[in-house]
Length: 362
Image (cartoon, rainbow, N blue to C red; front, side, top):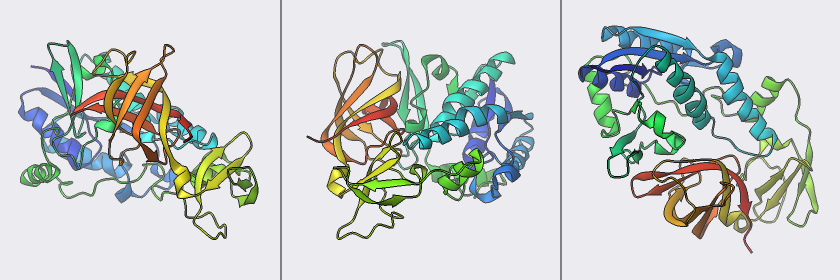
């Protein structure tokens, strides 16, 4: 019999993952990560994950299954590894994905170490993806979920071989409607609970307001400029903008203008036409590879430049210093620094990294 920690967010997915693991005969405990205090950031219960109300939902399901349940307080780590990184990225002209950082530094790092400390064998989550061991290659693989509408392999690209060896994802072979049916059949309180859609600590989507409240400082205004550096108007502060943005610019123009570049060094935001948003090549750091040891030789892949992006054919390779290069067959719109590029070979995740440079079209 194996011993498992079930990472329970209070949602239906992690609850059904817990049920399926328990039914497999393994010894299970439920655990929720306490990441912040609701009242500190004005979070409403119905819009977020890991809030106090979600803790009660997770506890209810765990007790219903006669499963021991714990809350691990990771608030200090969450502030340092997720919220601080989020703020730093925006202040440096990037657009981060804090859910990936939460997985990287909290769920599969802090929780992983807690698992080791108490002598448990693996962590179970409600992510829609699959982990398989390939004997021929002697390595663990991360694969897309069967339900392509819910696939979350993109946000798990940073998992290492050691972590994959101790992670189980029971929902990878199920569809979302099947998961809800299982939850309803067992009378779970969260069977019809809505999925969280927003960043947990910015539920209203106003990133700039959160950053200014979190840092206690007002972001300085600056200039909108065109591609040649000519003055167009004034912006509210670079944290208010992301690549590809059109709304909220308040700049009168004969044609639509889009945010094409953000320069924290000069505190300027470059505006241009939609055509200016397309580029074919990028660089990424913080690289993690899963299905291969290295990309010293160019490899044909498909790649996504954001979670909702449809993966596109590309060639990927690494330079001797480990920097990842991805060159798409066709130009892609609004490649953005701070987002993750994740590569696939069919259903397998090849790996990914954090975008830090975009090559302009020439």
